[in-house]
Amino acid sequence: MSKLKLLLLLPFLAFISCVNEDETLGIDLVEDSDRLSVGLLTNVEMSSSFFREDSLMTANYRYNVLGEYRDNSFGGVSSDIFTQLCLSSTAEDFTNFSIDSIYLTLAYSGGYSIDTALLKTRMKVSVYEVSELIDSTKKYSFSDVAVKSLPIFSSEVDIDVNSDVVMGTDTLNPQLRLKITDSDFCQKIQNFKGNNDDFQELIKGIKIVAEKTTENGFIAYIDMTSASTGITLYYVKDSKKQTYKINFPEKGNRFMRYEYDFAGSGINGLERDTLGLNSEYIYLGNMGISMAKLDIDEQAFMKYWKDSINNGATDNNVAINRAVIDVPVADINQSLIPIKKILCYRKYVSDNDTNLVLIHDAQVSDTYYDGMYEPSTNSYRINVTMHFENYINGNIDDLDLYLVPDERRSSANRVILNGTKHSTKPITMRITYSKPK
Image (cartoon, rainbow, N blue to C red; front, side, top):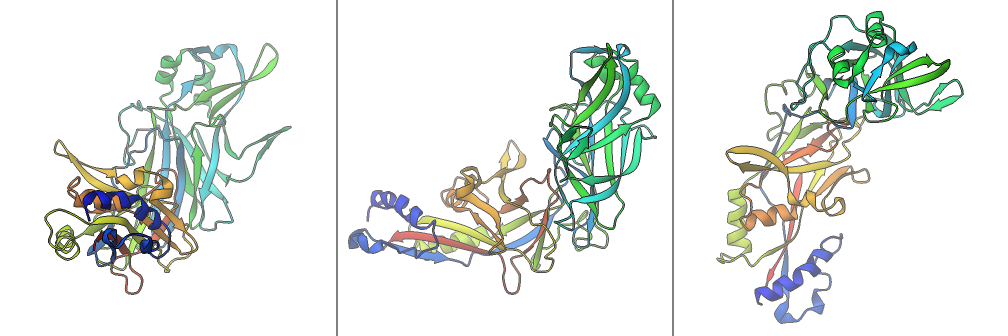
Protein backbone atom coordinates (compact mmCIF):
# COMPACT_ATOMS: atom_id res chain seq x y z
CA MET A 1 0.00 0.00 0.00
CA SER A 2 1.29 3.46 -0.80
CA LYS A 3 2.38 5.95 1.91
CA LEU A 4 -0.45 8.24 0.77
CA LYS A 5 -3.06 5.60 1.61
CA LEU A 6 -1.39 5.02 4.97
CA LEU A 7 -1.55 8.70 5.81
CA LEU A 8 -5.21 8.93 4.79
CA LEU A 9 -6.05 6.17 7.24
CA LEU A 10 -4.26 7.77 10.22
CA PRO A 11 -7.16 10.02 11.40
CA PHE A 12 -9.44 6.97 11.45
CA LEU A 13 -6.91 4.92 13.39
CA ALA A 14 -6.22 7.76 15.81
CA PHE A 15 -9.95 7.99 16.53
CA ILE A 16 -10.45 4.33 17.30
CA SER A 17 -7.33 4.25 19.49
CA CYS A 18 -8.77 6.91 21.82
CA VAL A 19 -11.35 4.50 23.26
CA ASN A 20 -10.85 1.31 25.22
CA GLU A 21 -12.03 -0.91 22.38
CA ASP A 22 -10.39 -3.42 20.08
CA GLU A 23 -7.89 -1.51 17.92
CA THR A 24 -8.97 -3.59 14.92
CA LEU A 25 -12.57 -2.35 15.12
CA GLY A 26 -13.80 -1.50 11.59
CA ILE A 27 -10.81 -3.03 9.83
CA ASP A 28 -13.16 -5.40 7.95
CA LEU A 29 -14.58 -2.36 6.16
CA VAL A 30 -11.22 -1.72 4.47
CA GLU A 31 -10.24 -3.44 1.23
CA ASP A 32 -7.72 -6.25 1.60
CA SER A 33 -5.11 -4.36 -0.40
CA ASP A 34 -5.37 -1.37 1.89
CA ARG A 35 -5.54 -3.13 5.23
CA LEU A 36 -3.03 -2.39 7.95
CA SER A 37 -1.53 -4.70 10.51
CA VAL A 38 -2.25 -3.39 14.02
CA GLY A 39 0.25 -4.29 16.72
CA LEU A 40 0.91 -3.62 20.39
CA LEU A 41 4.33 -2.94 21.91
CA THR A 42 4.62 -3.30 25.70
CA ASN A 43 8.28 -4.18 26.29
CA VAL A 44 9.83 -0.69 26.20
CA GLU A 45 12.83 -0.80 28.55
CA MET A 46 12.86 2.03 31.10
CA SER A 47 13.91 2.78 34.66
CA SER A 48 12.59 5.30 37.16
CA SER A 49 14.09 7.63 39.76
CA PHE A 50 13.20 10.83 41.61
CA PHE A 51 15.14 13.83 42.87
CA ARG A 52 14.80 17.27 44.48
CA GLU A 53 13.80 20.22 42.33
CA ASP A 54 16.33 22.76 43.56
CA SER A 55 15.68 25.74 41.26
CA LEU A 56 11.93 26.26 41.38
CA MET A 57 11.04 29.86 40.59
CA THR A 58 8.37 31.14 43.00
CA ALA A 59 7.99 34.83 42.13
CA ASN A 60 4.70 36.49 41.14
CA TYR A 61 2.34 33.53 41.20
CA ARG A 62 -1.25 34.29 42.12
CA TYR A 63 -1.70 31.42 44.56
CA ASN A 64 0.94 31.03 47.26
CA VAL A 65 1.39 28.38 49.94
CA LEU A 66 1.94 29.42 53.56
CA GLY A 67 2.65 27.19 56.53
CA GLU A 68 4.50 24.14 57.78
CA TYR A 69 3.60 20.48 57.34
CA ARG A 70 5.15 17.11 58.12
CA ASP A 71 4.32 13.46 57.52
CA ASN A 72 6.33 10.24 57.79
CA SER A 73 6.52 9.68 54.05
CA PHE A 74 7.78 13.07 52.81
CA GLY A 75 9.22 14.65 55.94
CA GLY A 76 8.83 18.33 56.67
CA VAL A 77 8.27 21.28 54.35
CA SER A 78 7.51 24.93 55.06
CA SER A 79 6.81 28.01 53.02
CA ASP A 80 7.24 31.67 53.98
CA ILE A 81 5.95 34.57 51.88
CA PHE A 82 8.02 37.68 51.14
CA THR A 83 6.25 40.63 49.56
CA GLN A 84 6.73 44.28 48.81
CA LEU A 85 3.94 46.75 49.66
CA CYS A 86 2.31 49.19 47.23
CA LEU A 87 0.06 52.19 47.75
CA SER A 88 -3.31 51.92 46.04
CA SER A 89 -2.92 55.54 44.90
CA THR A 90 -0.13 57.44 43.19
CA ALA A 91 0.68 59.34 46.37
CA GLU A 92 -0.86 59.71 49.81
CA ASP A 93 -0.67 61.81 52.95
CA PHE A 94 -1.49 59.59 55.93
CA THR A 95 -0.83 62.47 58.34
CA ASN A 96 -4.33 63.66 57.46
CA PHE A 97 -5.76 60.35 58.63
CA SER A 98 -6.70 59.48 62.18
CA ILE A 99 -5.73 55.80 61.93
CA ASP A 100 -7.74 53.60 64.27
CA SER A 101 -6.30 50.16 63.38
CA ILE A 102 -4.17 48.32 60.83
CA TYR A 103 -4.96 44.77 59.64
CA LEU A 104 -3.02 42.35 57.47
CA THR A 105 -5.52 40.14 55.62
CA LEU A 106 -4.85 37.05 53.50
CA ALA A 107 -7.64 35.52 51.40
CA TYR A 108 -7.74 31.72 51.52
CA SER A 109 -8.18 29.56 48.43
CA GLY A 110 -7.88 26.19 50.19
CA GLY A 111 -5.41 24.23 52.24
CA TYR A 112 -3.65 20.92 52.92
CA SER A 113 -4.08 18.86 56.08
CA ILE A 114 -3.53 15.27 57.15
CA ASP A 115 -7.30 15.13 57.60
CA THR A 116 -9.04 16.15 54.37
CA ALA A 117 -12.27 16.77 56.28
CA LEU A 118 -10.64 19.14 58.76
CA LEU A 119 -9.18 22.23 57.12
CA LYS A 120 -8.85 24.15 60.36
CA THR A 121 -5.93 24.21 62.77
CA ARG A 122 -4.00 26.47 65.14
CA MET A 123 -0.66 27.88 64.03
CA LYS A 124 1.86 30.42 65.20
CA VAL A 125 1.86 33.26 62.68
CA SER A 126 4.60 35.87 62.65
CA VAL A 127 5.05 38.92 60.43
CA TYR A 128 8.44 40.63 60.03
CA GLU A 129 9.39 43.89 58.37
CA VAL A 130 11.92 43.40 55.59
CA SER A 131 15.18 45.31 56.09
CA GLU A 132 16.51 45.25 52.52
CA LEU A 133 15.06 45.83 49.08
CA ILE A 134 13.12 42.95 47.50
CA ASP A 135 14.41 43.41 43.96
CA SER A 136 12.55 42.31 40.83
CA THR A 137 15.15 39.78 39.62
CA LYS A 138 14.24 36.11 39.44
CA LYS A 139 13.34 34.65 42.81
CA TYR A 140 13.57 30.96 43.58
CA SER A 141 12.37 28.75 46.42
CA PHE A 142 15.81 29.05 48.04
CA SER A 143 16.00 32.87 47.80
CA ASP A 144 16.06 34.94 50.98
CA VAL A 145 15.80 38.58 52.09
CA ALA A 146 16.99 40.03 55.42
CA VAL A 147 14.35 41.01 57.97
CA LYS A 148 14.35 42.90 61.24
CA SER A 149 14.87 40.76 64.32
CA LEU A 150 11.60 41.52 66.09
CA PRO A 151 8.24 40.72 64.45
CA ILE A 152 5.53 43.33 63.99
CA PHE A 153 3.03 40.56 64.76
CA SER A 154 3.41 37.15 66.44
CA SER A 155 0.68 35.05 67.96
CA GLU A 156 -1.06 31.69 67.76
CA VAL A 157 -4.17 32.01 65.59
CA ASP A 158 -6.78 29.73 64.06
CA ILE A 159 -6.30 28.95 60.38
CA ASP A 160 -9.74 28.12 58.97
CA VAL A 161 -9.88 28.07 55.19
CA ASN A 162 -13.56 27.14 54.88
CA SER A 163 -15.38 29.48 57.27
CA ASP A 164 -16.57 32.97 56.43
CA VAL A 165 -15.48 35.86 58.66
CA VAL A 166 -18.19 37.96 60.30
CA MET A 167 -17.27 41.60 60.89
CA GLY A 168 -20.18 43.45 62.49
CA THR A 169 -22.94 43.29 59.89
CA ASP A 170 -20.58 42.19 57.11
CA THR A 171 -19.84 38.58 56.12
CA LEU A 172 -16.43 38.23 54.46
CA ASN A 173 -15.02 35.34 52.44
CA PRO A 174 -12.61 33.00 54.32
CA GLN A 175 -9.50 34.97 55.22
CA LEU A 176 -6.80 35.35 57.85
CA ARG A 177 -7.04 38.69 59.66
CA LEU A 178 -4.11 39.86 61.78
CA LYS A 179 -4.24 43.11 63.71
CA ILE A 180 -0.85 44.86 63.54
CA THR A 181 -0.18 46.71 66.79
CA ASP A 182 3.59 47.20 66.62
CA SER A 183 3.99 50.86 67.54
CA ASP A 184 7.04 51.60 65.36
CA PHE A 185 5.49 50.08 62.24
CA CYS A 186 2.12 51.75 62.79
CA GLN A 187 3.77 55.11 63.46
CA LYS A 188 5.75 54.89 60.22
CA ILE A 189 2.52 54.60 58.30
CA GLN A 190 0.77 57.32 60.31
CA ASN A 191 3.61 59.77 59.62
CA PHE A 192 3.99 58.94 55.91
CA LYS A 193 3.51 61.55 53.19
CA GLY A 194 4.72 60.94 49.65
CA ASN A 195 4.50 58.77 46.53
CA ASN A 196 4.81 55.01 46.09
CA ASP A 197 8.61 55.06 45.69
CA ASP A 198 8.91 56.98 48.95
CA PHE A 199 6.64 54.45 50.67
CA GLN A 200 8.66 51.46 49.46
CA GLU A 201 11.85 53.14 50.63
CA LEU A 202 10.28 53.63 54.05
CA ILE A 203 8.78 50.12 54.32
CA LYS A 204 10.63 47.69 52.07
CA GLY A 205 8.21 44.82 52.52
CA ILE A 206 7.13 42.08 54.91
CA LYS A 207 7.79 38.40 55.54
CA ILE A 208 4.89 36.16 56.65
CA VAL A 209 5.59 32.92 58.53
CA ALA A 210 3.16 30.25 59.79
CA GLU A 211 4.64 27.56 62.07
CA LYS A 212 2.93 24.35 63.14
CA THR A 213 1.76 23.87 66.73
CA THR A 214 0.45 20.32 66.10
CA GLU A 215 2.31 17.19 65.04
CA ASN A 216 1.52 17.50 61.34
CA GLY A 217 0.77 21.20 60.89
CA PHE A 218 -1.02 22.79 57.97
CA ILE A 219 -0.42 24.46 54.60
CA ALA A 220 -2.80 27.31 53.69
CA TYR A 221 -3.31 28.41 50.10
CA ILE A 222 -3.37 32.21 49.73
CA ASP A 223 -4.80 34.23 46.83
CA MET A 224 -2.20 36.99 46.62
CA THR A 225 -4.16 39.11 44.12
CA SER A 226 -7.54 38.95 45.86
CA ALA A 227 -9.17 42.24 46.82
CA SER A 228 -9.18 40.85 50.37
CA THR A 229 -5.40 40.34 50.49
CA GLY A 230 -3.13 43.18 51.68
CA ILE A 231 -2.91 45.68 54.53
CA THR A 232 -5.99 47.72 55.35
CA LEU A 233 -5.92 50.98 57.30
CA TYR A 234 -9.09 51.82 59.23
CA TYR A 235 -9.23 55.56 59.87
CA VAL A 236 -11.46 58.55 60.43
CA LYS A 237 -11.35 61.50 58.04
CA ASP A 238 -13.79 64.40 58.00
CA SER A 239 -15.72 62.63 60.78
CA LYS A 240 -16.30 59.59 58.53
CA LYS A 241 -15.05 56.04 59.03
CA GLN A 242 -13.04 54.99 55.97
CA THR A 243 -10.52 52.41 54.79
CA TYR A 244 -7.35 52.56 52.73
CA LYS A 245 -5.78 49.53 51.05
CA ILE A 246 -2.05 48.86 50.82
CA ASN A 247 -1.61 46.14 48.21
CA PHE A 248 0.85 43.39 47.41
CA PRO A 249 2.37 43.79 43.92
CA GLU A 250 1.03 41.56 41.16
CA LYS A 251 4.48 41.33 39.60
CA GLY A 252 8.11 41.83 40.41
CA ASN A 253 8.64 41.85 44.15
CA ARG A 254 7.10 38.91 45.98
CA PHE A 255 8.02 35.25 46.25
CA MET A 256 7.91 32.13 48.43
CA ARG A 257 10.84 30.57 50.28
CA TYR A 258 10.68 26.81 50.95
CA GLU A 259 12.53 24.86 53.63
CA TYR A 260 12.79 21.05 53.86
CA ASP A 261 13.56 18.48 56.54
CA PHE A 262 13.63 14.96 55.13
CA ALA A 263 15.30 13.36 58.19
CA GLY A 264 13.52 10.25 59.41
CA SER A 265 11.14 10.15 56.43
CA GLY A 266 10.75 7.81 53.50
CA ILE A 267 12.90 10.15 51.40
CA ASN A 268 15.74 10.74 53.88
CA GLY A 269 18.77 11.90 51.90
CA LEU A 270 16.76 13.48 49.06
CA GLU A 271 18.49 16.82 49.61
CA ARG A 272 21.77 15.20 48.57
CA ASP A 273 21.01 12.35 46.18
CA THR A 274 18.82 11.07 43.40
CA LEU A 275 16.64 8.38 44.97
CA GLY A 276 14.49 5.51 43.84
CA LEU A 277 16.69 4.39 40.93
CA ASN A 278 15.23 1.03 39.91
CA SER A 279 13.32 0.85 43.19
CA GLU A 280 9.70 -0.06 43.76
CA TYR A 281 8.43 3.46 44.48
CA ILE A 282 8.55 7.05 43.24
CA TYR A 283 7.86 9.87 45.72
CA LEU A 284 6.38 12.88 43.95
CA GLY A 285 5.69 16.01 46.00
CA ASN A 286 4.60 19.58 45.32
CA MET A 287 6.39 22.66 46.71
CA GLY A 288 9.60 21.60 44.97
CA ILE A 289 9.94 18.44 47.05
CA SER A 290 10.59 16.13 44.12
CA MET A 291 10.20 15.34 40.47
CA ALA A 292 10.73 12.00 38.72
CA LYS A 293 12.50 10.72 35.64
CA LEU A 294 11.65 7.85 33.32
CA ASP A 295 14.93 6.87 31.70
CA ILE A 296 14.00 5.15 28.42
CA ASP A 297 16.55 2.98 26.65
CA GLU A 298 16.48 4.75 23.28
CA GLN A 299 19.04 2.45 21.66
CA ALA A 300 17.13 -0.71 22.55
CA PHE A 301 13.83 0.85 21.55
CA MET A 302 15.02 2.04 18.12
CA LYS A 303 16.74 -1.27 17.37
CA TYR A 304 13.54 -3.18 18.11
CA TRP A 305 11.44 -0.62 16.23
CA LYS A 306 13.59 -0.76 13.09
CA ASP A 307 14.40 -4.46 13.05
CA SER A 308 11.29 -6.14 14.42
CA ILE A 309 8.42 -3.72 13.81
CA ASN A 310 9.60 -1.89 10.68
CA ASN A 311 11.15 -5.13 9.36
CA GLY A 312 14.49 -3.45 8.65
CA ALA A 313 13.06 -1.05 6.07
CA THR A 314 15.05 2.13 5.39
CA ASP A 315 11.91 4.31 5.45
CA ASN A 316 9.61 4.27 8.45
CA ASN A 317 6.36 2.71 7.24
CA VAL A 318 4.95 2.29 10.73
CA ALA A 319 2.51 4.77 12.30
CA ILE A 320 1.99 5.11 16.05
CA ASN A 321 -1.73 5.19 16.81
CA ARG A 322 -1.29 5.82 20.51
CA ALA A 323 1.45 5.63 23.13
CA VAL A 324 0.29 5.66 26.74
CA ILE A 325 2.06 5.45 30.09
CA ASP A 326 0.07 3.96 32.96
CA VAL A 327 1.35 5.09 36.36
CA PRO A 328 -0.22 3.25 39.33
CA VAL A 329 -0.44 4.89 42.75
CA ALA A 330 1.24 2.87 45.49
CA ASP A 331 -0.87 1.32 48.23
CA ILE A 332 1.64 1.96 51.03
CA ASN A 333 0.15 5.28 52.22
CA GLN A 334 -3.53 5.84 51.57
CA SER A 335 -3.76 9.02 53.68
CA LEU A 336 -1.98 11.22 51.12
CA ILE A 337 -3.98 13.61 48.93
CA PRO A 338 -2.75 12.75 45.42
CA ILE A 339 -1.41 15.33 43.00
CA LYS A 340 -4.22 16.34 40.66
CA LYS A 341 -2.21 16.18 37.46
CA ILE A 342 1.24 15.05 36.33
CA LEU A 343 2.97 16.98 33.55
CA CYS A 344 5.57 15.40 31.26
CA TYR A 345 8.68 17.35 30.31
CA ARG A 346 11.68 16.54 28.13
CA LYS A 347 15.19 17.94 27.86
CA TYR A 348 15.77 20.72 25.37
CA VAL A 349 19.29 21.91 24.56
CA SER A 350 19.77 25.36 23.03
CA ASP A 351 22.98 27.42 22.85
CA ASN A 352 24.69 24.98 25.24
CA ASP A 353 21.94 25.56 27.79
CA THR A 354 19.76 22.64 28.90
CA ASN A 355 16.18 23.22 29.98
CA LEU A 356 13.06 21.16 30.55
CA VAL A 357 10.13 21.86 28.23
CA LEU A 358 6.64 20.37 28.04
CA ILE A 359 6.32 17.50 25.59
CA HIS A 360 4.14 18.29 22.59
CA ASP A 361 1.32 16.02 23.79
CA ALA A 362 0.90 18.12 26.95
CA GLN A 363 0.53 21.25 24.83
CA VAL A 364 -2.42 19.98 22.75
CA SER A 365 -5.30 19.79 25.24
CA ASP A 366 -6.14 18.30 28.63
CA THR A 367 -8.52 15.83 26.98
CA TYR A 368 -5.85 14.58 24.57
CA TYR A 369 -2.96 14.46 27.03
CA ASP A 370 -4.84 13.44 30.22
CA GLY A 371 -2.29 13.06 33.08
CA MET A 372 -5.07 13.48 35.66
CA TYR A 373 -5.41 11.37 38.78
CA GLU A 374 -8.19 8.83 38.28
CA PRO A 375 -9.70 7.66 41.60
CA SER A 376 -11.53 4.70 40.04
CA THR A 377 -8.25 3.11 38.91
CA ASN A 378 -6.01 4.84 41.49
CA SER A 379 -3.59 5.75 38.74
CA TYR A 380 -2.52 8.29 36.13
CA ARG A 381 -2.72 7.75 32.36
CA ILE A 382 -0.42 9.90 30.23
CA ASN A 383 -0.57 10.20 26.45
CA VAL A 384 2.95 10.45 24.96
CA THR A 385 2.11 9.59 21.34
CA MET A 386 3.57 12.73 19.76
CA HIS A 387 6.68 12.47 21.92
CA PHE A 388 7.52 9.03 20.51
CA GLU A 389 6.58 10.06 16.97
CA ASN A 390 8.91 13.05 17.23
CA TYR A 391 11.76 10.84 18.38
CA ILE A 392 11.28 8.22 15.65
CA ASN A 393 11.09 10.95 13.00
CA GLY A 394 14.25 12.65 14.30
CA ASN A 395 12.59 15.83 15.54
CA ILE A 396 13.92 15.34 19.08
CA ASP A 397 16.99 13.42 20.25
CA ASP A 398 16.02 12.29 23.76
CA LEU A 399 13.16 9.97 24.75
CA ASP A 400 13.57 10.40 28.52
CA LEU A 401 10.56 11.85 30.32
CA TYR A 402 10.38 13.96 33.47
CA LEU A 403 7.25 13.68 35.61
CA VAL A 404 6.49 17.00 37.28
CA PRO A 405 3.52 17.81 39.55
CA ASP A 406 1.15 20.42 38.20
CA GLU A 407 0.31 23.27 40.64
CA ARG A 408 3.61 22.54 42.40
CA ARG A 409 3.88 26.15 43.62
CA SER A 410 0.27 26.50 44.79
CA SER A 411 -0.51 23.12 46.35
CA ALA A 412 1.00 20.79 48.95
CA ASN A 413 -0.42 17.56 47.49
CA ARG A 414 1.92 14.60 47.25
CA VAL A 415 1.73 11.00 46.00
CA ILE A 416 3.74 7.78 46.10
CA LEU A 417 3.78 6.00 42.75
CA ASN A 418 4.83 2.49 41.82
CA GLY A 419 8.16 2.57 40.01
CA THR A 420 9.26 0.61 36.96
CA LYS A 421 10.59 -2.19 39.19
CA HIS A 422 7.48 -2.67 41.32
CA SER A 423 7.01 -6.40 41.83
CA THR A 424 3.34 -6.69 40.85
CA LYS A 425 2.08 -3.45 39.29
CA PRO A 426 4.88 -1.35 37.78
CA ILE A 427 4.67 1.66 35.49
CA THR A 428 3.87 0.34 32.02
CA MET A 429 4.09 1.65 28.49
CA ARG A 430 1.69 0.60 25.73
CA ILE A 431 2.33 1.59 22.12
CA THR A 432 -0.33 0.71 19.53
CA TYR A 433 0.97 0.94 15.97
CA SER A 434 -0.14 0.24 12.40
CA LYS A 435 1.86 -0.87 9.38
CA PRO A 436 1.14 -2.22 5.88
CA LYS A 437 0.42 -5.94 5.71
